[in-house]
Length: 84
Picture 1 (tube, one colour):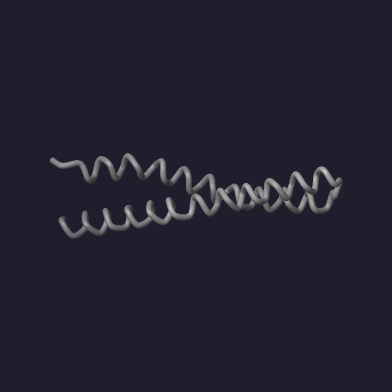
Picture 2 (cartoon, helix red, strand yellow):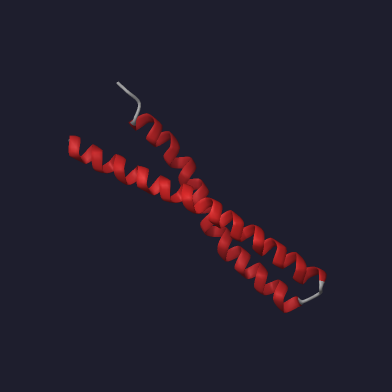
């Protein structure tokens, strides 16, 4: 039972750490894409605007999943590592 708990804690911590590291990168990419969408909208570039909007939706889905995963794993890790 001890080894299984150790593996579970290690995997959960690793997944959460990867999520925490990737979240700022995803946020920067979304912000950059927001600027591109606004630029295309102001310059009335329909094709560029729709392309940027499609890319934005494709990038937001992993961002939302990553954020939800971090919020789900935080209480799980807090309870698992709480001293007895």
